Image (cartoon, rainbow, N blue to C red; front, side, top):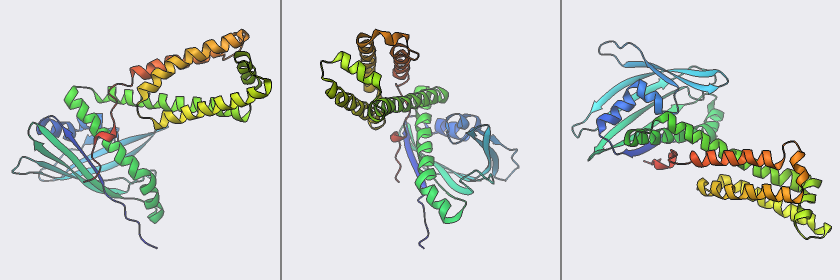
Length: 303
């Protein structure tokens, strides 16, 4: 069996700030833990003279659990061209960690009044070839994405003063709302219109459109397919602001149509008014949080 060999993770970004500022933001543990999504906290241990700087890190993984690990800065180098390199050795014995031990470096290269900041690191995983396969398919792409997203958060923080906490609030709000609307439209199209063909869906459509009863079922099914496609677009289409604006027009229209077709729906629990009003408020929140969202796509991922 051919041994699996995964490529090291590489991430590069250009930050329009002096090298000293980028160095401080990434080497100071109090600042570092604010923007790096991979760590919840970083604590430097007392340093003895002529020894490597040791540190401990913690990554919260939810449900009150955290992965604790160790690390050490095995050396820094300041070159004649003013570039700097920091080498790291890290690892953990936590049974839930997909990383056992790794090594890597951060490099800082001044370019006029900007800094090219990049990293490369690799690690070994538990569970042999099975662990390597899972790492290649799931965890390594996730780690590369998290590193790139963190670098973009750092860039926006240093260049614009946009704090990492504010950026991450916008980022996660944006994507939670995105996946919510993806689910809602898929569900509304698939369950009550295609799979169940709920009688109320048929009755509302029949009341709105001059159709024969035999044609109404086909129209309801067609509407269901359109809603499913719209749900998929929420994941596939990048410009979410356009979708949010379109939805801000569609939802009031759908609400009014349901009331016109059958005003008695207003007495139903979770009726179109209360349900769609909730979606309208979430759409507005999505619009407000969709500006200046950090993205991993701003980084180079290939050396």
